[in-house]
Length: 353
Image 1 (cartoon, rainbow, N blue to C red):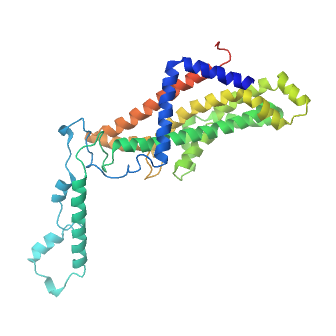
Image 2 (cartoon, one colour):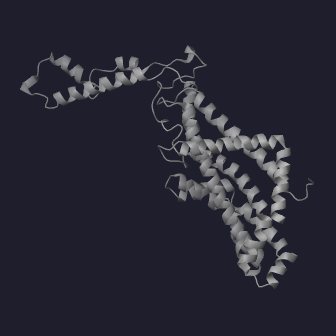
């Protein structure tokens, strides 16, 4: 009943905070978008080249128009597989020398015809502008941003769940058992906190050279458990001497039951707040890792990989991919941070209803 009263009181406080409810609505909208994207109901065709290269946003107009592929193809040589073949043929005067016939002439002619037909069709199908522009391959930036949010948000939340799970387990064992167990986990905690977090993340990323979403989750989860550990350990030290724990010990409850059936429900709000805080931090960390080349592999899009591509596009004046990824990330991180602050205040028992 105590835990139910705490959560009911926290929900009542949250509902009274308009900023928190708006932030929660934004976060839930992003999560819904991630679910729909992962299930393929939306942006399943984000890799289709629907626009010309660096297609400008529709609201920019013709000022930022780029050359369509069909115009570029007209400047290509007749033989794209061998660019100097036409020059050599002209020098020979169209006459085969020494009676040697090119055995691949027919095959090359067929390939040229197929390439010409495919290029013409692609040139006709691509649009000169897109609602918010396109990247260098002609992908729709809006669809790419939505697909990138799937990777960034999933990495942030799963890594936060792993870090809070490890921190809670280690903190519970350390705070409840004390003695040698507490000394061991404190020593282990000191090793991780002695190294700056950014250097620790980059060091683990260098060791785990295999790129992928799972690798990023392990990097962030295995280096981010120290904060939850410190707070959970302190809560367990405080609660293990409470009357309800002593009563559970008197009726013969096991240590595991006292740790996770009696004490944990009363400190779960700390773990929840820590997960919210780490979720925001890990989303930003994934963006940084992908931007530096330690993140997602080629073929997987995230906000970090979009920002990595955008740094070269800015030289050409193509700002729309950078803007789309930065605005989406800023909106989610701001909403998540506001909701986390409100949740922490709502779950604080010292705050009056």
